[in-house]
Length: 113
Length: 113
Image (cartoon, each protein chain N blue to C red):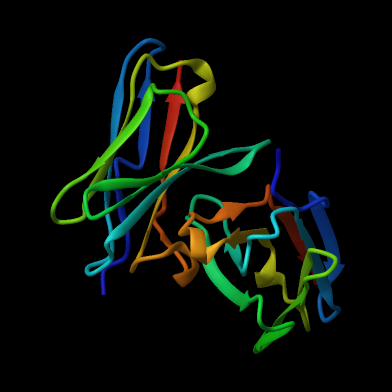
């Protein structure tokens, strides 16, 4: 069973517009969430994270929103740039259990100029 | 500061053989995790080592094993290779817990023929 789900395999947006990537989780023990970006032939790189005690975290053009009651988080990229084209992975962990990061299957973002 | 180093980058093996992949974590990082990435399944957690002990394990058959040395370097081994083992194998290191965020290596691309 998939504990972290990214239901949209792909997303296309125009340069300058907002990109919204979504992620749902099922395990209520998860209390820390991260987003990673991956380019082909490279390992994933950390983008932004959020603890369950917050509902929003911003870092430059990237903002992550967490809705604990809906077990849903989203990553907003504003404005989107062609260099943002990559695969984005949502990941979650349950810190008290000391678990590994559990990843979603990823969403491929394509930003056209 | 050197990143996570994985060797080799590419590997071609024949079905039935065994393979060993190597990972050198960032200096000071004591946790090393391994993931398998395939096109349809995203990043699937294999196992995590901390201070030479396996701390977490994913749902992979016993053909997949690993170990960690006193200098935190880690190896993973796959015995009796199957065609379905063809994947990108990613190693990630972190200070202690996964929710501190991983730093990934570039991966080893394994092809089983």
